[in-house]
Image (cartoon, rainbow, N blue to C red; front, side):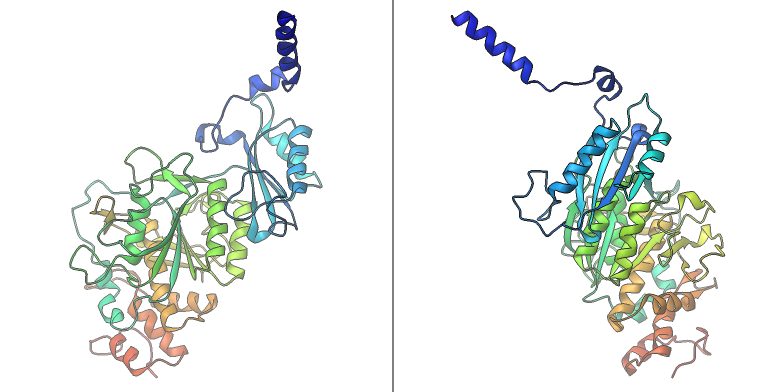
Length: 445
């Protein structure tokens, strides 16, 4: 009798196991969302769900991110797509700020990704079907990091500007790698932080690129150590969506999945500025999110490679995003004459993990400088519009001279602001150049 019961239990356990297609499983080995080698077989699918954020917390047992979730309807649709197209569902989540449910699928290696995308694009249930894109940060240490100190802040006449504006009460959201939260120049400067790439890169404070970009924007002023940021009294929200390409490297990569989560969080944060010192291919989901961010009044600043690569220069190529090139990499873009600005980006001293400093180059640094300057302007005029910001930045770009470097000039930007709005005498007094003649090219009211 005992033997019969044992055989019955074994039979029931076998019958209760889910049926699987051996051919499909063989074509679908375990894969990571962050594996660049297999990224070409990952698809990101999105569709509208009007019930996002309006359901009871008990409506679904699906993995939640934060205090929001998607409806059971979305989960049912995502499962239907999984079965209909014989895909492997890796993860799914609600993109709350645009009312969209997102799913990452993997296409079997023995199936055509292009054909699958084409069929998904024609599926009435689907609003966005795209490849998982890879993005790269735009900074490097250079071969001779200590060869020459570039006085970029003196070129911008930051001393004059900081007497009146330091970015106080302005919040910058930065999507990048992590930041050294205990760096002497960054302690207390980061108001919030979150890691959206923790599954592949759990560390936060050891990341170089984000620490370097953060230092350019908000490193402390007059604290008796290190450097000074462009907007030292601004607060930074550090959103990690990128991870080091190699151990100890400053170069980092991101993908559509992590970036979308971070942009959604940036919108929710209420930040005034969003800095993205990274580039990659056009991405429909990120376009949707960034357009929502800009519609909400967030000024988006992105690195521009300046290399004339239209298929690898997103989000800088997106309309209304302020694209920033390093002065060494300037390539005129006739499609965006009012959106592209230049700033110093060669061998700029900034913060690195473990309380250290080094000279960093690239448009990542230039984009951070422009985000800092915008924070200075917003302190003086909090209701500054995107169009006004673009005009001020364009007016403030100066050519090289004996005592300055080409690119954006914070002091000139303040003077340009005073031409269009009422500035106090104090602002004018500290902003005026202490030279003969009006070298800035602006008339002072």
